[in-house]
Length: 205
Image 1 (cartoon, rainbow, N blue to C red):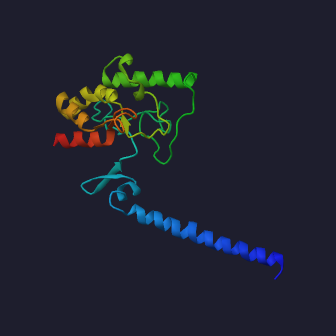
Image 2: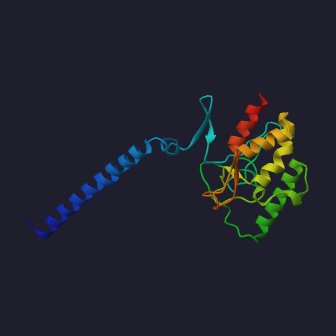
Image 3: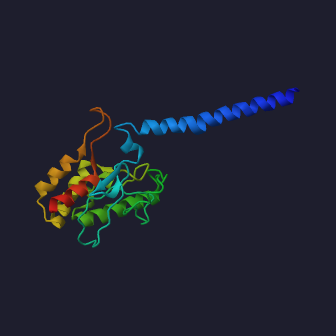
């Protein structure tokens, strides 16, 4: 057997071994691990269900849309660069993610932020100065499921009014769905919007 034939056979053997390892053994191993108790929900996308119906994911924030904008009963997420609306408010495109890639001093971004402040201030019945930063700035992914406690507090009066609940009751629900810092010191507290909206709807019944 000449040198070329030996090299060809060696290459084919390596190809076969790596195909089995990376194309069969490794994916199968990952799948088996994902079936372990405590890991399956995350592996399946951390799906949130209510009465057997899928209503969203624990990891992806999608802004709720009110049937009547003048009577909006929902807490809202951060804006997203993938939203269909030019101002970034409203539902994001959950099939993709990403920021606008515009710098903090970009005039278009500054104008968009000012427009968002005006829209949110009008919706919540406050001055633009009271609108917190995360209400008008998108994250890197544009699909954050959490908002700051300050942004949640800003929305409490409207949500309470539109759902026929007391502000104290809604604030209690916000507190129940506020996560602390990771490990007690990493990051900032966040309020999970989907879970909070579901809790508000349940409290109405």
